[in-house]
Image (cartoon, rainbow, N blue to C red):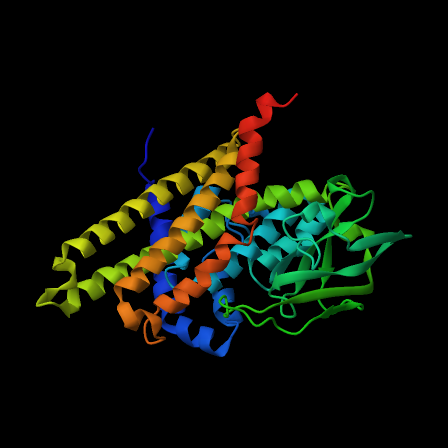
Length: 382
């Protein structure tokens, strides 16, 4: 049992931290304030291999593992949580096409996604099906060599800007076995978008409804076989949950550092805040909780890399624990800043708004408990 990162992993982590410090952190407040989607900066991350992190190298990916990805997204989110999260979504789309698409689809889309000539969105959630994802209604009806899509997807990051949409559709019976995965390119007739959602956080990426109205795509754009889409979606979410947990972890780490700096400068009752024992205990608890979250996240990522039988359970555990812990630590850091933490002059209120959604998306934390409990109790099922 070796907890040390390899020299390569340390170099990857440092590279991502430099990108976050140089390209993300200086602009994060402005992007949040102006609701600006920094596509140009996001595309520069591809030059470092961050657009196809665990996509295979023959189509331009970096061929890294899930632990490597966790290190990268933890580092990126230290600069801008929302932008790091979009890069994670793009990576999930690229990986899904690489892993399950035909060779023709891999060659057509993955090189452009890995270089970010194209950027991608993941479309599973619908206005009427969030946690109950297998109840989705968007239909794809076969018409010769085409599918005709009708329906809507909700809360889609990058909607209206992304070049390709990885869409879960119903091609068969009700339930998970009737779901397939298809690719819809931007400017396809019948594809349209709702108005940008007005959100609490994640303001450096657009979120909107994606509509399909008699949207015709070739059957060749199907990823894998009919009926396999839900399986692909859930496999994608194992990694997506780790990435979003990593984004919470990195943001909370940045919040803790801000609290440490502030408590060393701020005076109260004749001495620095960090000389007050109650604040020392609070900082110690924050650091301890973050370290526990980090160990759990890295272990889950290792299990997913090793394809252990309990990997899905540990991904759900890590997602629940790390995102809950991350939100708590950011909130505690804001409290340490007092009234200043509530002002936009400091990054804490933005961090809090950005990490809150991590407890909801990629599977709400209540659903993570369902996954863990179901796995724990399966041996008792008749």
